[in-house]
Length: 96
Image (cartoon, rainbow, N blue to C red; front, side, top):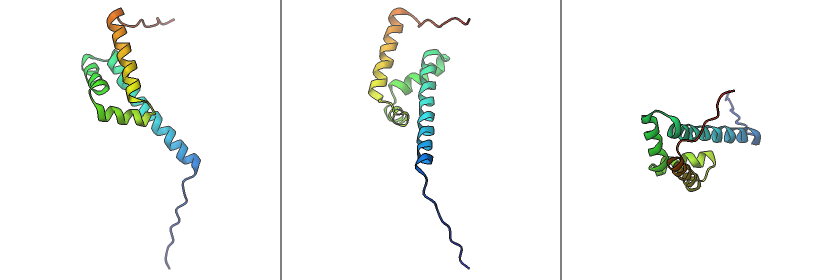
């Protein structure tokens, strides 16, 4: 007796859920890098700076996974960086 294995094709909703999950993961990776760059320890800030501004391939891959435009994101981050240099750290809201 021969066993038959049937593979059912992945439904569109399962594929969509996987894509959404993957995009959320890469968005979280990028968010963490930006948070480290702005508020992390000195070591974390340096590593994040290298990733965000000097590492082309990895940065581009993470942006692609998150659905972000690498050049546009870098331009916005540089703008934030210049603003902070000119005006000082961004104010944080006080806890109520």
